Amino acid sequence: MLAALAQESRLAIFRRLIEAGAEGLSAGRIAEDLGVPPATLSFHLKELNHAGLAQSRQEGRFVIYSADFAAMGNLLGYLTENCCGGDFCLPVCKP
Image 1 (cartoon, one colour):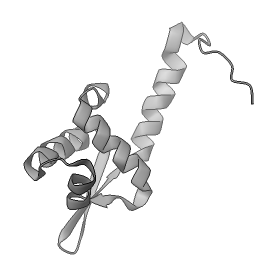
Image 2 (tube, helix red, strand yellow; image 1 turned 180 degrees about the vertical axis):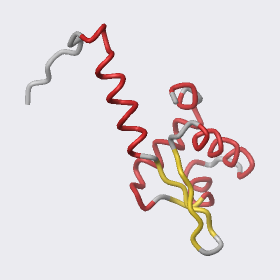
Image 3 (tube, one colour; image 1 turned 45 degrees about the vertical axis):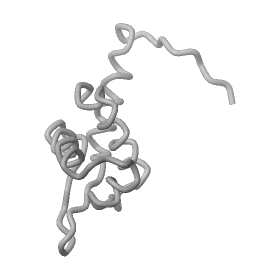
Image 4 (cartoon, helix red, strand yellow; image 1 turned 30 degrees about the vertical axis):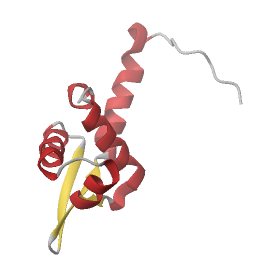
């Protein structure tokens, strides 16, 4: 998952999917929003899907992509639990 997000375009696409929420976005809308050519976008969406970070569904003639929020939560949970050998390593934020 981290390798998939390490690429600048994929990270931008994933961020856009996160912003879109569970409703997701069509590939055309993502390409338009980010200025990514369709062939390049298709490659990056496939990589995000393969990494388990994105999912797709068919709605009529459109393919809608959305972030896999459960997978993202699992990744963040793993990183949080295993950060700094299990010790709390981030400064406490005060409201």
